[in-house]
Length: 101
Image (cartoon, rainbow, N blue to C red; front, top):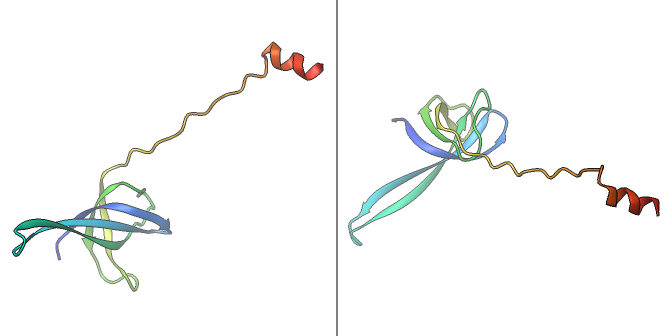
């Protein structure tokens, strides 16, 4: 088998990730290209992968019932959104005067 490239869709397991691999093939009857998605479980030894990362998988010996791939490298890290936090300023005079009344 040859290495495949896909996107991490789940990393909720310890040292394992689920990778979705898309492929295009030509449908002879409809004369169109059709996209199919396969999901593979892969071994991630260092737990480096996050959801949305683009990774390259190499085949390996069977590591469990469904895990036959290892993460060879992370090609592109996902951009993770961090929501901005709002700081409350306790030194405003309007707040302190309303508390004492």
